[in-house]
Image (tube, rainbow over all chains, first blue to last red; front, side, top):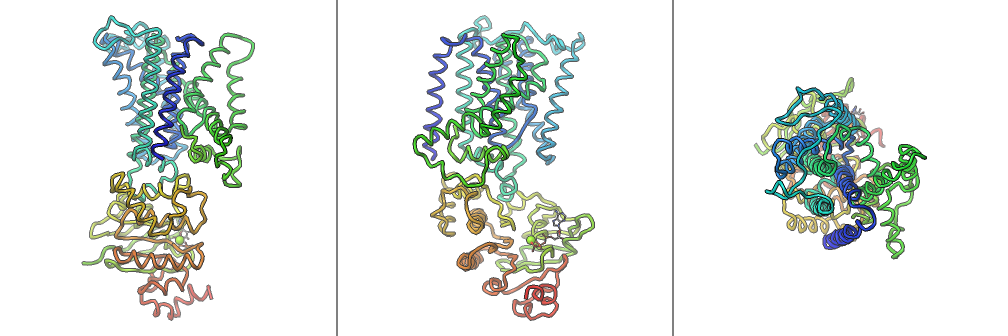
Length: 355
Length: 237
Ligand SMILES: Nc1ncnc2c1ncn2[C@@H]1O[C@H](COP(=O)(O)OP(=O)(O)OP(=O)(O)O)[C@@H](O)[C@H]1O
Ligand SMILES: [Mg+2]
């Protein structure tokens, strides 16, 4: 089992690495870079939602927080190494505190959704309202709806003059995503990850086994926050500006859609979902014939109706069927569209579409 | 001082309903006790108060001399208390082996836990279904998986809420053997409705009725008691 997972992870990394090398000859690397960044953002929610059962409506908060932490620190410090680390550490710490509050407070899933939603709104409203000159952190003006432009973008550690940009930045982001993917795979295979999945399956039983569920959920949530923060940090360097829109509900909703369409209960699913949908959005943005929001709504509805497990797990199933795998032993009565998301994740995990 | 579990005036109210009513209960080390009583007598609620799943409205719980009133479930579990709940509480999407490994992994490293899980699987005769998803198993099998989870945690105090429910006669016999075997190491409280089953394993029986302890005595004395027959056996017969 463990050996099989390892091989699967390796295969994914090799394929993704090759795709990364080929990518720039098909789509320009500037666009590809942001697709990778969104992929990482989706991965962060795919981890805590798909494996931890924590549906967070505010994943964009950590994305924005990472970006703003980086931008503010980079404006003040110049050299990008410390800002880069802060862009991960601050969202991690904030997610840890927020998670601790929610999980130690024993909030139900519904309230968890509401709170994360409200936190998103608060950040959005607050950052939008910081246009005045009194909102400064060191040398950095928060700038309200104008955002923060003109900060030092990513450089080779120790050498502020050596910017990592263009195709180098593309490879940097690609490798970062692969490293994060490998680390998350490792985490999920570790006892910590296995207990996290057990909590998703049956929180009460895990508690009765003697595990401190609140603490473990808090840690997982914080790890998700850190990954989202990293993607925000990269986004800041890519866009060379950070704006309050990063904290928006629309951004949060988009992450959720990426995960649903790509497939929960896998890691590759959300990443692929994010890249495909973000690219589609980019293409749609270049025309004015059809409304982007409408198309996205349609895709979401169609995918929930016809591919309730998400694209990647479904492809995994098809592949297994073709190879004559035993996916026909599915229990009867587990219908497709009428079931909860959770059951689907379980199926995805069961059928080993677990990539 | 060999009392491993004690409650003093334990009370649990749900709005107007008093599910557990000033219960004073005592269990000796390595004792095997049966808890019986009609539906709604408060047996499961009593268990939940012991494990921390419910915070009692009143009264105290002592486990191994320490007061555990109001503790969280994981804290109580860490003392060495295992519970099999009335509705099997298992991880449906995971394999039997993973379910049991998780329980063993709480106190043992990855490899050690693997051995412990293998032991529990063998002890409960789950070998043929060890790699099956628990969600696909029959009720009786799930009951055994849950017992495996409990055993793998190596508790010295075990609470079993209707462990034989939904099992075939053969499975019930095997369950009785397992329980007697477990009792060599651990004190056990069993909630059961099956009198045959109770007779085959227990000596002392506590009868619950409307949240209170109606009687506490030897199996035979309890079976003979007219009051008990009225509230419980009479209805069944
Ligand atoms: N969470 C709850 N909220 C409200 N009332 C409850 C709750 N849990 C139990 N009760 C009530 O408390 C009483 C005792 O229930 P309990 O489940 O403890 O009985 P029991 O002895 O285990 O019965 P059974 O033999 O049917 O399992 C019942 O009247 C029940 O309706
Ligand atoms: Mg009960």
